[in-house]
Length: 270
Image (cartoon, rainbow, N blue to C red; front, side, top):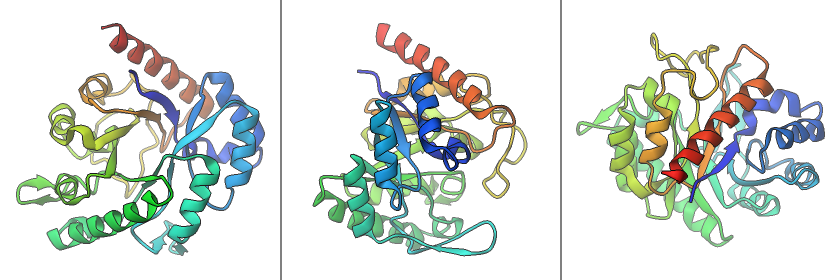
């Protein structure tokens, strides 16, 4: 069975903030019936109302579970919502998996740091299970560049996680970190239940320290998306995302949706 095509709402959040209903309607018109929630804890009711009005559901969502405070690019610090509030909002919205989207680079340079991340994700997963939810982690490049015992730090994390904790592999950021996607995905196997389908030129020193603005619709860049999708045996969600895009974002999303739908149809036919 092909994975559900989804969209990380961060991609279009600038359009959703002034007109949530209108933005969600445009996503439904493109063809989406599934999205990945962003900043949902304080607006679960509003999101659900807009989703229900346009035949959309959110099955995955990003929320901070490991760190209690998160440094922001402007130098300020954000306090993460409590696990109790996060899981209550997730249930209200109908999520299945709550995915931590970011633990800073310093945590991934030592085994002790990775062990701390694993312990906190495992504890969050135990809490989430009481609500009928799963927990996951989403990578950028900085979890994959450091090597611990010869392996990327994210791969070490996978060995320390409870089997209930899943991974959402960002294919663009993994490629930027120099990962050969197919063998890496095969190594992690059933742990990967979601991927971020994101594309662009793999040139220069790509890093979240300065997010590129030259990302492209899926299938138009250098990321081996088709091969990666075919290599993931337990994929439930293929989530389109842009971090930076110079064109009309809804047009970019629509192009990615069309490519991904065609790609997944070919895999099913094969």
